[in-house]
Amino acid sequence: MKINNKPIIKIQNVTKAVQQKEIIKSYTMSINERSIYGLLGPNGAGKTTLFKLLTGFIYPTVGKIEILGMDITTERNAIIKNVGSLIEAPIFYEHLSANQNINIHLSYMGLKSVNASRYLEMVGLGQTGAQPVSQFSMGMRQRLGVARAISHQPKLLILDEPINGLDPMGIRIMRNLFKSLVDEHGMTILISSHILREIELIANTIGVISNGKKVEEVNLASIKKKYPAGLEDYFFDVLQGGL
Image (cartoon, rainbow, N blue to C red):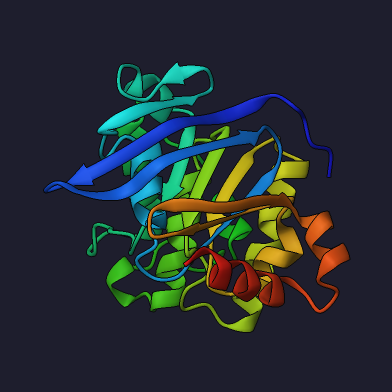
């Protein structure tokens, strides 16, 4: 896949403190357009907090975050129209259908209703558009969350553990979808997952976070040269040195 050099995300020395405890510590990161950035780290490392900072759910205590050249603290509304996200367990209107949930999301974005079935097809839920979400399994909810996140055709997609609860077929569908969103639709994806093999199959760049700090950031091709057995060996090696 072609990678541009123009950054879509710039995080500069960001610290986030909650009740005087620093959750994110002097974090700096840059992600280029039309790339897939895999963020790795143990539970409690700060991945979800970082994603919430990038989507404007919370704001930095110190530092600056720019997305598409705009400051998240002052231009959040303009930014969010260009960002799709799935952070933690997705929440839906349980009594409504998948189609209706997607169209409600679009109305929040100030956009007209679309053919929601197109996005449901993309995530492997093509036959479920009229089904109430209350009948969906965990894996189906994850897929619907991704469909909703891409339905307004964002430039940036932020995904926190998007393949949780998916069966092998669902994981493969998501893997192929993420690649096509970058190659064919020009999106940029920031993704976290504990399934390291999946990150290894799609990412261009790997970042490792531990205890709120960036431990390392490296091109995946460089990792493969040094760790021919794969990303898992790299991750544990780096993490043991970074803790």
